[in-house]
Length: 188
Image 1 (cartoon, rainbow, N blue to C red):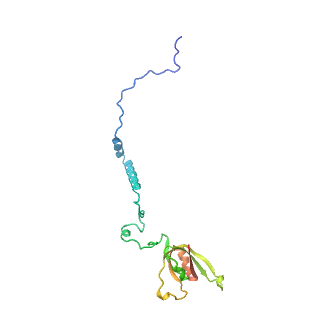
Image 2: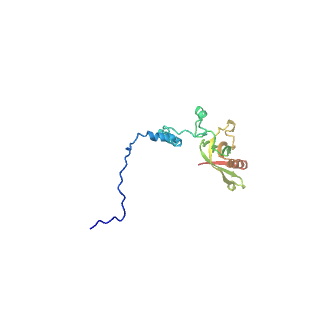
Image 3: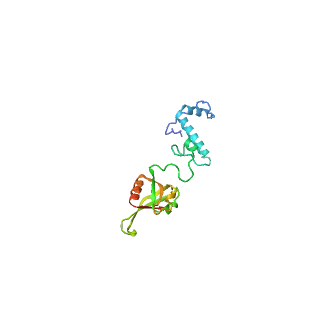
């Protein structure tokens, strides 16, 4: 029996050419290539710096205030804020509004940092039961409770002053309500 020719012709075997061996380098060639590409080098430097900062952590203390924050900068470090829960200026979009509260004894209970709702009571009828009450400002921040003047202690029903940090719109409502009625607070 004669050998059958293959269905598909097989190419003749070729000899493998000689080539130099592949050597694994120490990585300097990669570093040279990285230095040639500046964008990658900058990105790598930033990544290494960020990793080092994260690894270092805040040092156990409070994080540093953001740039532009009132507590940031050389002046703030040289002149620390006065003690108390309330610092410097109120938050953006807020104003400080001095408000006279009808009940002076209630104001004595307030401290800076308290949150209060301000209620306006207007005389709508002939009796106290017919008076109208409405909330003028919600969540107002007490920034200061001035000491009463000696002449006003026991001076009757003049009320007491408190300074609140409120949005501008609430400050306008407070001014209008204090002109037309008595103001009271609830601590929240």
